[in-house]
Length: 169
Length: 154
Ligand code: FES
Image (cartoon, rainbow over all chains, first blue to last red; front, top):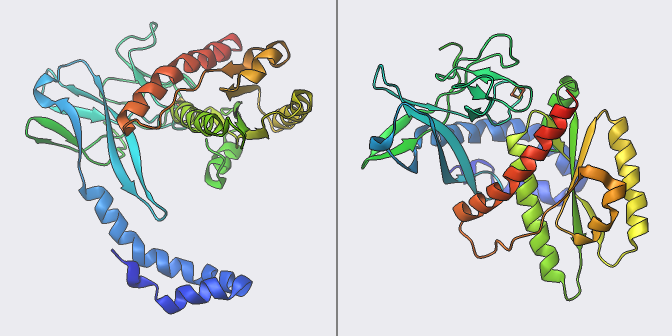
């Protein structure tokens, strides 16, 4: 990766020049970010993470799929656990994998947990609701549909990419 | 929300929606219970992290209230009460304290139902996915307590 975008000399000057160095860092940071960002982005969008969900087992009823993967950021590599709600649409036969992150303020939504509104995604924080396909229900706080995971099938198992926002369903 | 500038910015813009503060209570020790102290810290960090993820849009997870074990409990209680009034002045309607330290149990009548005590589970030898399952199973029970409190105040 782009370890060499910042020269040794620059790094040394950050670390050795104290306060002045920090001020210089403030000026140089935008350039560094510019140099590093495209690489990180490319990696994130292009990678699919394996799950333990068999594609053949999917039905019309959304199931929760948890998966763990390694994420590298500037400081260290860490394990991230993410969740998707996945079902296979009866009508179209298509697989739908939804992000559980509420588009209002980011709580985690659950399927079919509000007895008053069955067969919807429900957000416990401010009672936001979504249709099964992720479409936000007007009159509840969420302003947008749930993000959609791109997916792949490999060896019978479901692989999930990075959730993508949608403006409408 | 976490205690980071970007989340606090969201908090400032959506205060009417974010009305609950979570304060982890974490003991620190270097004596024979040093390892237990570390274990509680790990467990409570993961547990409150889980709660934060589930309820991002309604809670702010504050930095841990960290204290030396064997310190005078009355002193700690006074300090925690100071935290409480500041947090309330900061605009939070609900405060939850999450801890594995049994020492706080005695003060249940003072801290009331906001004290969530949950025994810590050693996670050191577990795979990431196993940890997640354990933390989730414990965390789920706490989520219900939050929801109940919110519903009471609807
Ligand atoms: S965060 Fe989901 S409704 Fe507010």
